[in-house]
Amino acid sequence: DQQVKQNSPSLSVQEGRISILNCDYTNSMFDYFLWYKKYPAEGPTFLISISSIKDKNEDGRFTVFLNKSAKHLSLHIVPSQPGDSAVYFCAASPYGGATNKLIFGTGTLLAVQP
Amino acid sequence: AAGVIQSPRHLIKEKRETATLKCYPIPRHDTVYWYQQGPGQDPQFLISFYEKMQSDKGSIPDRFSAQQFSDYHSELNMSSLELGDSALYFCASSGWTSGGAPYNEQFFGPGTRLTVL
Image 1 (tube, helix red, strand yellow):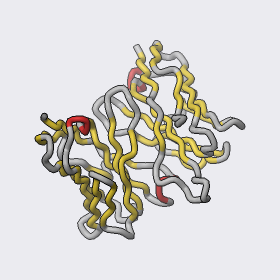
Image 2: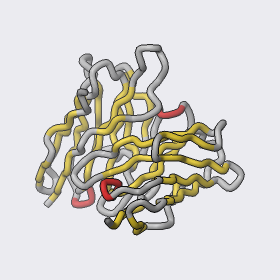
Image 3: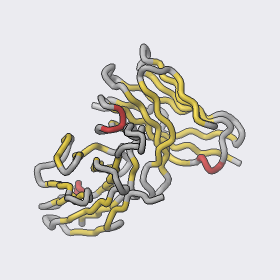
């Protein structure tokens, strides 16, 4: 039972354009969401997070939007750079922010073309 | 800055053997998490420890056990290994900022790739 879903296994974007990665979840009790980036042979690296009391959080080129009624969040990367090419995981925490277990989506492979 | 250290990075074992994976959290982090990522799959939570006590348990087989030691490092012990145990095993840690607030993220190590033949 996949509680966090990333329905696009891959995404290709031109350098300088916007990348939009989507994530859906099924459990309305999730209260904290995170995005991680993962390069091959490395562990996931934290990008940005959002609490369920907010609908938007921005950090530089990265913005996460949360639509609680639709149980949907998205990560926007503007402008996209070739170094952004990686697998992006959406993760949700059922309680207590990031201090408890994270439930991950299946990931989206982003390829930014020069 | 110091990161989470995992050892070994690669491990090859035969079926029915045992394996021990080690995790050294970031200094002053008191919580450790273990995740398993099978081929083409998302990381699955196994178990976590806070202040040397088990704090949560996920889909960890009974053949696996883990503990956190007084220096906060953690070990994942895996016995009677099966082919299906072949995966990447990630350790993550979290703690508190100097201001007393919890970090907004878990910090992941590079993982241990376990191959069971």
